[in-house]
Length: 293
Image 1 (cartoon, one colour):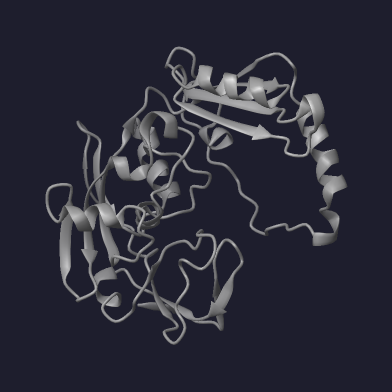
Image 2 (image 1 turned 180 degrees about the vertical axis):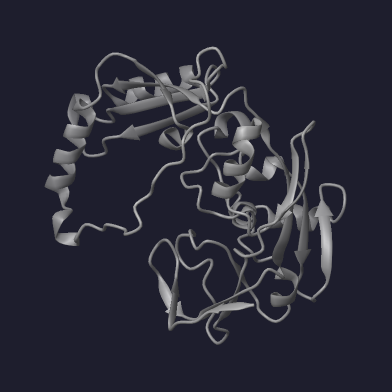
């Protein structure tokens, strides 16, 4: 067992409290005497932080084994600490991808269940809970139970989006999406105002499994709500490059702009440059999935 010791724990929203995280490959054991589990710490606010007077949380990231996978149905069972990054690294080359693509891959399966995360395909496939079929949990009285839509259905439904308040999520069973290639066919276009943006989203929804938009919230007048609309689908084998997408190198040192740099005028200037950096016509590309998601 490994312990991450330190005076404070924080989440993605940079809320910090006194506490420490205990980690182990045996998630059942370390959840016996603590009230809260924590994955990769990407929750906003304080949802993955210890409550006052109980400064220890059970870290799940070492409990990340893939327990079973059915190649025919795409049904996966894995421990709650498996990250979305590792899941896609293993299964995308085999023709499968997670059914919901949120804004970060650095979250755990347990966290995805607890937050019932959504992604760019929400208009088609709903949130992550729609693809979860079974959970293994430790509940408040210490019991370890399995729940689904048929067994302990109230517990199951309350846990999807329950932010960990129903118990510790130990294992997750969910169905992965079968994809024709590991590349994304993407289109992007500039949209001049909010009315046309809404119309473009409505038009794209039935035709494209993935849609996402960026809006210049500081634009005014006839340009109010202008932005960039991105649409995507998995590329067919005939249009995809040969081979697998290469792994991406990531910066190891985060860069945070000082607060005095970010004000209304600097953001307005950035938004104008970003908007004009996209050509007025529709732009079509084959992308690395990490560039799109």
